[in-house]
Image 1 (tube, rainbow, N blue to C red):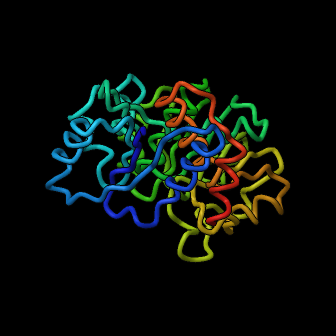
Image 2: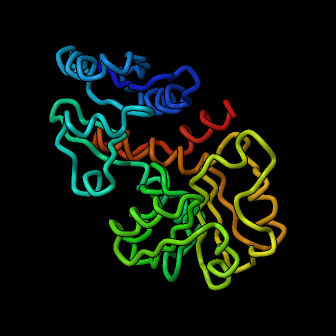
Image 3: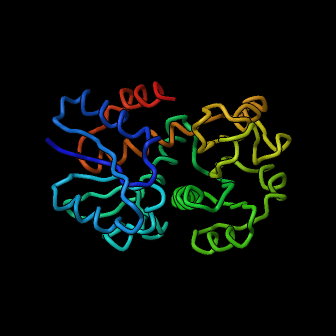
Length: 263
């Protein structure tokens, strides 16, 4: 039996196990996906233990996505982003499939990644989105509550610029793509983007997936924009991890059904 898993703290809320196990069932694989919740001081030992036990692959989540960089050989994209969320344990190679998840979520909805993208947020999800869209050739405007963080990220990302949240109205006027990479909308019915700035030529991805329909997505739909809920990004980062570990095409429909059944 192959064993795959998730390292994080906490991980009890994770939707990765049903998503991955749906793939194993669909393909008739003798495999399981389990969660591990080491204390922060024990994280390095946990990774080494996974390797010693022959675990085939690991996902890594908060708060360990940066810590794991020192324990693996990150691929160029993960190295530039500065975070790893997927590890091929036999080779100890680290990947960032969050970035892949952003791109594949847009492509699933037939969105052409050309022109200008606006990314709201400069944390982990914002970094992944900014690098992913820049690598597709887009101009990337990063807006963040703390402008210093946006400036630090923009300095690392090709063809990127930094802005305060107050500039969103002007930035979105000619934008093609918008990503909310903050947690705004998760706990309260709020949006980080003024509704008046949204328009029909936008494709809007909200990384928040609980709830699936955030205020941002409701207001974007009302403006005629293409809307993409955060479960698509979550799905496709998992799909990319599965394909890295197994070398097989992921059964996307089965994984998506299992994911959305839990939301």
